Image 1 (cartoon, rainbow, N blue to C red):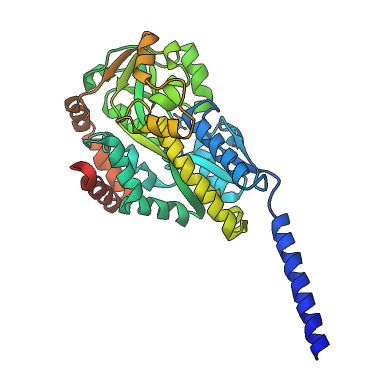
Image 2: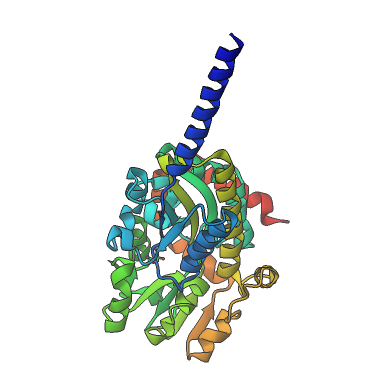
Length: 361
Ligand code: X2X
């Protein structure tokens, strides 16, 4: 009996060993992480940072390769969510803007002038992510059978144009503006009297070179300065009209296949990526905290004052006053009304409450 028990224990131990090595063997040699813009954009740098931190922390056991430039979806950025869900992509550092065609709630922070009309737009964004509305957004992503791992940031989207300056909604009349293929953008620019052109980012930059549009909108630090938009557009309108938060996601099967310890490791690296990415998006545009943070991790970028950099390159930088933001807020009321119905009035209300809670601090 004793021998029999010993044998059983041995068999069980061997099975355990076999299982754990089988588990480990199930890890892929390479995990694919999708990022829409190029490696030198703030978003691209954040993707690389995550992959690097995971490689370091796991001592090379988890190898994530970043595919910049929307390579994994042949440029069609609005298909990214479907490809993460079906497993063609393992991870994506994604923008709400590119996933909102499938998940309409993610249009929340694209409601025009909704976040920028707050006294402190960065505090308002953080309050949404940390609050009830952020939780509701995470639930939407996870109900779509994609694992949410953490937040990051592309940034508030600002307008760059070859014609200008733009001070009032009337100045937008007839301007051909490149937008991504997400419906709310067409509505916003149409409401402002402009002529929106849906073009994938992968083709947009050559389009700017050829002058096929009069302008485009993207975040100042992460895209407009990083990609030297001054080569095409001499007017920068800092109107902060909407923000695309980024979120790190994983295919659900890929996620479940990681051990609990490795899931915690990935979450820790995602949290660091959030801090890094937000600091890159906000440096020089906030109260100084972003630069302080970047210095503390030894990653202060070369350009820390985007407005000065733009001006150095001959760009006319037009920083909207709160009154100008309000004028555009009023001019886009019909878009917010229509899209509040699409996003869900409950979610919009929760976000308003989250933002109000920090507005007077
Ligand atoms: O297409 C864009 O403008 C970009 C790069 O910002 C996004 O993917 C949302």
